[in-house]
Image (cartoon, rainbow, N blue to C red; front, side, top):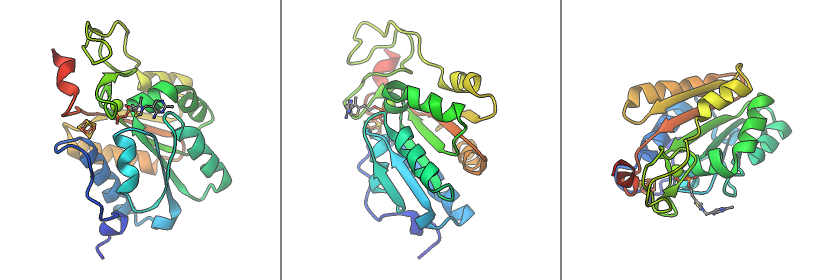
Length: 209
Ligand SMILES: Cc1ncc(C[n+]2csc(CCOP(=O)(O)OP(=O)(O)O)c2C)c(N)n1
Ligand code: SF4
Ligand SMILES: [Mg+2]
């Protein structure tokens, strides 16, 4: 078994061909392999949504939680056993929408969680409704005349909440840089949020109309 395949379940991901989540999972598995983390010491906590479906594809301990509740569940795991490497994986809808208060709480307390947000600017699993990061006036299934809201700038918000934490943006357009930032987030001692901007190939086109 190669060092990398140790972190793979062998299940074929159900994401659309070209989905940015393929790059995120590859970056995470490569980072686990480079750091040679034992699968039994990783607990990945997943939100609900396309990104959250990564639960089936990473071989480690995993908890597939409720929409927006990934951070408090992960906090509980980390506080109970601080030796574990605890990750949160989810989308912009779950982590910046229903779960935003939890994200702020974890950042304020600088809980040592690694939060990876697959930010596709939409609720994708539910077929393309507006999320907190949908660009102003962009059309979505739930805002056919354009989103009337100013998008949330999560990285700026989290930095204001606690300037000591790691909070950075990455993009799927630059895979090498993305992999480097995943590594930085994983190595950071304390709360880390990596916002990964990505295009949903199934529903993202409507944002550009
Ligand atoms: C409490 C709760 N609210 C709403 C839903 C319905 N729901 C499932 S996935 C989803 C949107 C997911 O969007 P996001 O978190 O951005 O993930 P993506 O699918 O875009 O990766 C919603 C609203 C749910 N399952 N549970
Ligand atoms: S709907 Fe979008 S986010 Fe979901 S799997 Fe397809 S491309 Fe990825
Ligand atoms: Mg989303």
